[in-house]
Length: 544
Image (tube, rainbow, N blue to C red; front, side, top):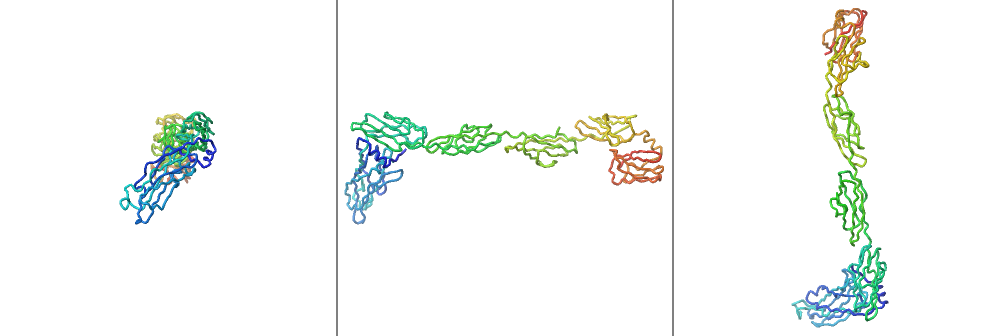
């Protein structure tokens, strides 16, 4: 790492004792037509200066009056990275290929900055502009020339280097003695370092706190003691502000993109479930709740870490049910979904709606829907629900078997009715009537589906007795009109449906023959009751 020694630092050095040693180095001849542009040079193996320096050299250029322009020379030192300071400039040279000897002073601030920028070398550049062009008026081929460019300055006997004095907190700087004149003792001062002092020739020092720190070396040579202090020689960089991002909840099987910051390179641990563990924004698909730690490295090579927790939320377990999930054809099911917070049903067929935890359904055959559930975390899962539709049993028939009414249908359950009302306890295949009236039965099969018979009248006088009294009806089956004959006196006609309900009531005026209108009466089996002075007569009627 390059360091800049300030003028104030030089004053500190000047006040300290030092054993003077001379640095001098001469560069090879710099020549040729390319000197018309900047040519770089380097003085190697430089050491800290105790003051000003001297630059000596010769330069020559070809000049002929016919070109009407004098020769010029520029010499500059690099005093900060990529930036140069002029240390010599001359114009007005009208001599033709004459070597001109020159000496110029280099001030201590310029020399210090140049030495510090080169970090053990001093870099510069030179340019000569003459009044001719190679092959056109030039007196020699290598025109122009800079000869014997020599840098001389007084330097400290004490000197030191470090491979990298720019470190991270907790880093160690390895100092290397670069003193001259074979010191017999060493005394190092490391403010902010651990240790703070050392008598070793090449000590190693640890720095824990960010900041810039001076380093002082005191040596004793045959010329006496010498002290060198370089301010801010050690720089302890700040740690990067590592940021792994905010904790997140991710649904099982889903992915989320992480986003780290604070550095130039990144490395995630563990790498399991990551699309790339060496980028700042990998895609994470964790199988279970995972804490991911990111190691962040900045441009200075300093590292810090942070972590983010991805909580894996299990998908909702969506379940739909309508009891035994079987209905009879023509019935409606009430389907309830559980396991989530919000629900969607698809397709929108045979159901009361497409949202909500519960819907009504009335498919005409076995049918399936997809139920999609979303929980409070936004996690989504679905299930397929199938509602089975079975046909109802065939309608039973009721017959008389002696004193009993019975049905031939075989079922899982039976319920008998009298005049449309449930007969308590009448749950067998046959039933013994205890009173006259219209008897019907409802059967239930193994699927829970039901069917109901037509009512059959049971009385102390059967149909044969009724017919013997002369009351009869026609046509059978009846259309819109039903004719009653054999009526004796005024009477009331009642038509009962299969449930024992009166669907038609008409007063008969006493004539032997009457007509009933069956307009609006649905097709089916009925019982006609005629009640007059002679009693009550009943007979079956079929409406086509």
